[in-house]
Every structure is written in C-alpha cells, then in structure tokens.
Length: 475
Image 1 (tube, rainbow, N blue to C red):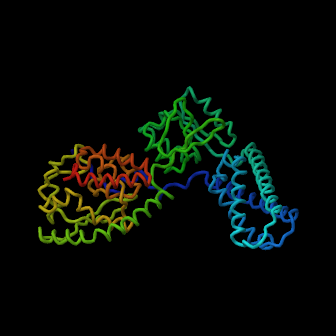
Image 2 (image 1 turned 90 degrees about the horizontal axis):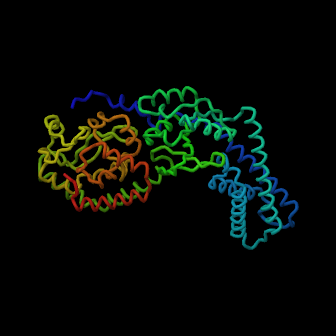
Image 3 (image 1 turned 90 degrees about the vertical axis):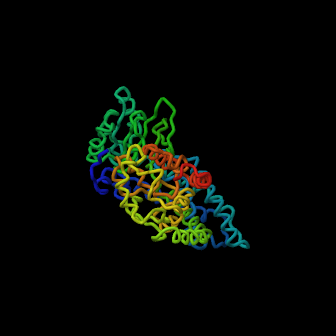
C-alpha cells in the first residue's frame, strides 16, 4: 500500500491539542457569577456575625474579640460551599436545602475549632446559635436577590449565553421551547444532525466558532462518532449539552445537568486532565521510584548479559511521539542488532499488521538471541520506568509509537496522543502482539481514555504481570 509522505506537524493540525484550544466560551460570565456569589456570601456572613455578637450574650472570647477569627469563619464556610458545588450555575446555586446543610456543617466545624483552640474558654452559646440562624437567613436572602437581579438582566438581553441547537426536524420546536424556558440562552442558530457528519463537520465547527457560540445543544441521536465529536466541541471551547432522549442512555464520566424539569447530559472532554492528571502523575512517580529501587539488580544483570550476547550498546533509544504529539526518546534494553532500523525498509513487505500503520514481524531476523528472551517477558521495556520518572510517560496508557507509524495516522487516531503514553495499557493486556489491526488497538486505547480511573490503572498493571508471565502474544 502506498502512503503519502506527510510531516508530523501537518497531521497534527487535523486535531488541535488541548494546550492550544480556545478559552472556554462564556468563561467571563461564569467567573463573574462565582465572584459575585462569593462577595454576597461574605456580606451576608458579615451581617450575621455582627448581629450575633450584638444580640448574643456578651462573653469574653477570642472568637468574638479578634477579627482574625471571623476571617477563619469566612474561609471555612466559603471552602465548604465551593466543595459542595453551591457556586455552580442553575439549580445548584438555588439549592436552599443544601445551603442550610452546608452552613450547619460549617458551624459545627467552627465550634469544634473553637473548642480545640481554647478548651478552657467559654463560647457564648446564644452567639453561636444566632450566627448559625442569621447565616442561613442572610445567605438564602442574598441568593434570592441575586436570582431576581439575574432574571431582570436576562429579560433585558444581558448576560445570556449564545446557543446553537442541533436536533431532528420533528423535535426542533420542542427542543427550542425547552431551552428558551431557562431564560438564559440566546439561540443564534439551528441545524439538523447531518451537519455533524464527517463530510460536514469541519465546516460546521468553523461556522460555530465564527458565531462565537458558548454552548451547543445536541440531540443524542445526532452524535454518531461520540468521542470525536465531543473532542471537536472541547477544542472549540464550546460546552456540549446533550438534549433529553426518550431512551435511557449512559456515557462514560457524563455529568447530569438540569434543563427546566428535564435531565440533560454534559459530556466532558475525552482526555485525562486537571485533578485526574495529577492523581495519575503522583501514582506514577511513587510507583516508578519504588520499582527502580527494587529492580536495580535486574537492570545490572540484563545489562551484563546484553554486553556478553552481542556487540553494541546496552540501551536502545528511539524517537517516539508522546503527549500532544511531542517527540521524546524512549529507553529500552537493546534486543536487536545495531543497524536494525536501517534493515526495516527491506522488511516492510513482510509486515504482519493488516492496515500497515504499525510494523510487526513475528520472526524478525533482527532480534538477537537474548533479545527474544527479553521480549518474551517484556524485560526490554523496564528502562521506560525512567521515562515515567521524567514525566514523558505513564505506567499505563496508549503505547508511544515511532514517527513512521504516527505519520500514517488518520485524523481520529490523534485522540490517543492527548494522554501520556504508557509502558502498558488496555491494548497490551487484551492480546498484545496478537492484535493485527491498528483500528482494534485504537478502540482499546480510546476505551481506556474514556473510562480512566486510578483503580483501572491498578487492574491493568496486575493483568500485565499475569500476561507477561503467561507470555501471551509476545514476540
């Protein structure tokens, strides 16, 4: 099969990296909303504190005599509000039952702090109870005032989000009516599901960017290639809202979101970012440090055997394509003759991968005697633990591929480059080299990205040990 020669940078332009994506549209309005609510809560708590001190039983206490303790109270209450999602949009900020519970929890924590800080001092019980009651009352009133002001502004066309609707013709009026009931969206365009088909997709997203769309409401049936379409919305900085469907459906890591009385879904980006990334990174770093320490005798033994088996260096370093298509040098124990990469051109005709994207050859003549043993038990991969320590790889993730393979990617394949590549992955524990079609491997990589959790990484690592010991599909 003939392939057009393309540079990696040309191919990467087909799918933009999250690092270069547009800022989430509508973000300024969201930031203003959060800071306004925090400001109102500070004012409400200040009023509640003053009323509680004035009308409560006078009692000498550090909590009532020092302003620094009121600052502690503010930090505790607002922190719990943030963690409880009470600064989110819509029904979340109007959840008065949750506000009462959260304020009560914050006051219990403050009471505990007061007792631990000054166990021999008395705290006015009336002041404490009044602060609790006044806090709930003042915060709920401030939220009602905020909602009234917001509704008034939106009726005059201010602070509304620009929205685009993609739905079937027979559902168009019902969906538009449902969205307009929220009174916070300005619908600037409507189209049918065909606009998200592969042939129309690029033109559609260019049009949405031109309109400056903040949120897109899309019917479930309109999203055919869901992962790729979600990625396009994410890189365009547009929040994707999936409209209610008559059928019940689920999607990995989807978030429930209320539209009037109806439940919708917001599908997050199909990548590992934010807190998920740092949890994964901390796990990788801790495990890699432990593994390097425990496996150091194995490293020295393998290095000595390689030197005795064949001439050449102990390690093999090859340029691979990693996170965001950045190139890096992968470390492996050498398992082939020193001129293996030059000999590959003569062996391309014998490639056993059907679509030709990857290069695999079961009885590769370039592999040394010791190399066959190392590959059989995946011992040649052990130096990649150093790549993990340097932040170039993860213990679990899609395998980093050579430039030769990545240059044969189709557009949708580049999604796998938006997470750190791994030493092992779902592909490796589901058949390893027995998988002879790259599309099947990509499906497994995407399934891993969509469903990632720390427990999933641990399970894959445990399955990797079993697969390696059984020598399943390794060569």
